[in-house]
Image (cartoon, rainbow, N blue to C red):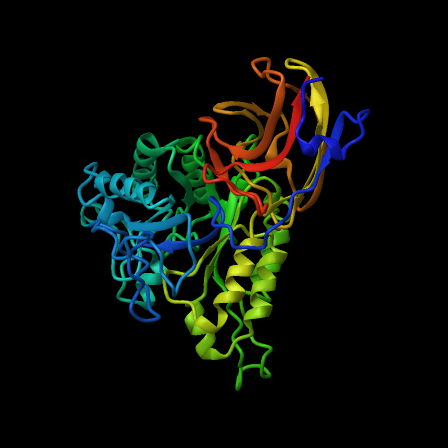
Length: 465
């Protein structure tokens, strides 16, 4: 046997495997594909100056970040941006798209360390559907027409079905599968695209099919509670996520209507009901759950709402993504949101690994792993857990075969035969681990205290004999 360091003397000579139990950390891990998002802006951009926000106008200009380190002490660190544009802004003339808005948004998000979620909206606020669409003689929604001066399309009009479908197909053709596109909202009708508007079931299904055919690579996310969303969820061979608006809506009073604190609100009424009637109880196991705030977190504080109760509900729904509209979060609650953002989505701890203590180069050894996901959801990207065997400047990466998307909350055990790299020479080897992408780069931080500057977590030494 080659000479060993003092670390080897801690084990009996007969021992050939070792248990590894790395020290954990509870620090905030700003990991990708989970946590808080910015809205209509990116890391390093200023927040909205008040507790109001803008649903309609996605970014059209892209100035450099105000905060060069991309931080904001009144908002959570984030790895995602969420942007929406109105149809009239993206397609001001029939077939003439402002793809440059989305192209630049995708580039800017990537430069700021974020992926991008997108929605396009048939109409929103003061922005109606495009002028060219009305010039075709398109019909208005008779209910909206009767009660408001606002122009809203009749979604069952063949003109709407045709031109909105062509709009979505064009976006899918250009952006489906873009590496920095996190998801695309299946928002086919209604104000902001959220309610489904006046679509009949047949229209809703027809429009949902357009999204399903246009976006076959990028993750689609339905708007919870819509008939088209329910239909799309049942589509064969598709795994869709869902999002809901008005998270935190706990209207405290209903005086003069119903007894105090017993009025209708999203948190008590449609959320749990839709979860079961939409067939989305278990979809979190394969696709993300996103919640957008009702009003803003700052508004919750003004109203004196119970933030602890609200945040607990998010955990019950196994949410991964939180969109509080780039409005400041009260300082008194910031510590709560840091802890909560660790828990939503995935949060991977190493409970134990059983790895070789010594082996021959090229030898196959059975290794055992227990991962503790202290989050409330899995990760949804096909990254890989890998071991790295380092000897001086020589580094050899061995990806494991286990699908990390199967790391559901709590413990996951698996065992694999790991081949010790043949290129290793006799002597001491350092074993590290990381979750890596296809370029073998660490992309997800584990809740392990020891972490190198290169993103790899040192685990233990072993001996090549």
